[in-house]
Amino acid sequence: MRPCAGQAALDLFGPPRGRPIDGDLRWLTEVWGCREADVLPHLERLYAEFMAWEAGDRAKVLVDFYWPRHRPAFDGLTPEQVGMYDRTIDYHTTWDRCWAIKRGMDPREALRVVSWDYANDRPSRTAA
Image 1: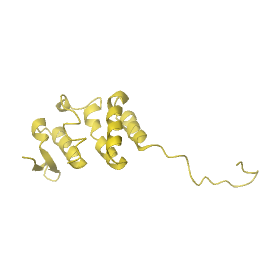
Image 2 (image 1 turned 120 degrees about the horizontal axis):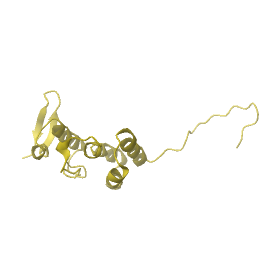
Image 3 (image 1 turned 135 degrees about the horizontal axis):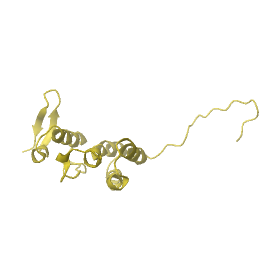
Image 4 (image 1 turned 90 degrees about the vertical axis):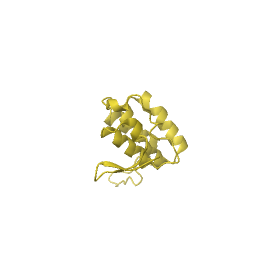
């Protein structure tokens, strides 16, 4: 419906909302420079297996693996190894494992991290 001359028009509903996966893909590619071909398969799997809010939080670790200037410590590791798809662990654990690797912890040891003590810059819990 078109407004008449001089009639006020309010856009009450705004533009249609996009899919959350599209926002995550844009963030990974445009902000971080990750290649779409690298991250899209992971995003599609995450959004198929998890609720949208959790898929988006789990997807944040993709930066550590696919950012063009990622740390060499991540070479040879996969997002699966840090638990990105593991329903038995909290997504914060995946973040903490990546943080441990970025802080210089041996990647094999970092994969045992359950949580990180950010105040003291060390693991607070590790798996047996």
